[in-house]
Image 1 (cartoon, rainbow, N blue to C red):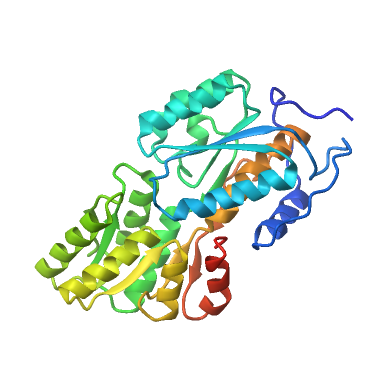
Image 2 (spheres, rainbow, N blue to C red):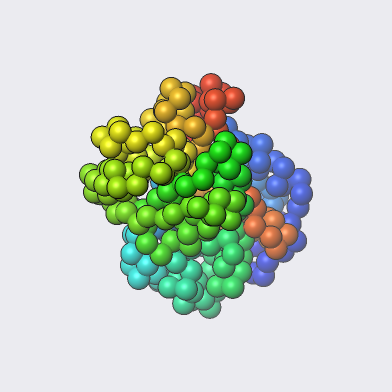
Length: 330
């Protein structure tokens, strides 16, 4: 049976496919490859070349999980993954164009700055190359022309985090934005503020840990009324812990996302909870969705974003989650 090429139109989705993918992407164990018999099913040696382009800031451990999920998916379906990244929007757009010029079979990209990437996304469509969004841009991915989307509803995540803060008596959270212009980070803080009106934002340079610590230390010393710190990435949470210690702040700390150290800090009671968007799943699903589209015309999500979060990690489930965080899959 002939397979669907990158130039064919989008087909109908299948619920059974979504359920199967959810089952295989939820854990950290490698999946077994199966032979590709040309029947249109999953697995095997597809030979597709898939480009993944992100706005990763070098050194941010969050992206290790995105990439790990993407690499596992590529291995499972027998595709070649080409990964590239740049936090600058114009350079990320250039990387997407490079993938187009290389005539890859599919592109998965983050859309942290969707307006700046819209022309590149359209260029992929003009070239007949399917492109899916993930991680950032949930409210804009359809407007710029991405076929599918995989990620957390960041506004909902922020609202839910804010509700938990409010229930615990918090009144003046400090929400720490580590990358200017990111729609996902701004949505998180806006969500927190919708539940706790006293929320205040602070902009820091997430590429410089020492600068983050210094900025937060100064702010906490200046304003002792801050009772919660909301960081939007696990490495920033670890910087916040240092700033809290150095400033003598009694604020409580919550964070978005996980790494092994942040998970251990939850275990140790230093971080109240994490709002996890499950980046491993985002990377895995982004690659797998392109494979299924190319191979079988599948449209995962039925025209809606496929949510990978928010999923909360706290003292109630940290013993289960910690080994996965140490394995770089959660």
